Every structure is written in structure tokens, then in C-alpha cells.
Image 1 (spheres, helix red, strand yellow):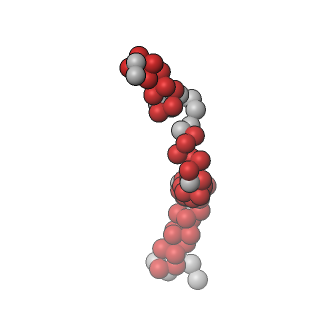
Image 2: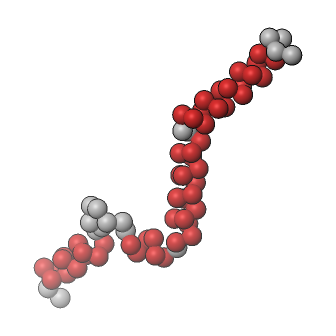
Length: 71
């Protein structure tokens, strides 16, 4: 075989283009990527400032009850 003819095939199929996702990996097992996407979204949701502020609010309420500032 001519090695020069083999190189473009490898470039097109094995190396993903910068702005396109690796289709073969996603297509082989879509459930894993779906689970990872959900997990990432969940992590992002938890780290939103509003959620953080809400958690801090409840933590502060509990602390103030401990300190006897609230009935």
C-alpha cells in the first residue's frame, strides 16, 4: 500500500475537527455521555450563587438559633 494514501484517511477519521464532537465515541454508548451531562449540569446547578446564598441563609439561621438570637 502507498503510505501517502493512508495518512489522509487517518486524519479524517481518527483526529476530530476542533469544533465537532468525537461522533464515534458518543454514538457507541450514548447513555454514559447523557449521565455525565446530567451530572455536570447538577454540579453547575449546585454551584450557582443563588443556591450558595440559600444554603448560607439556612446555615446562618441555624447558627443564630444555636446562639439564642432567635426563638
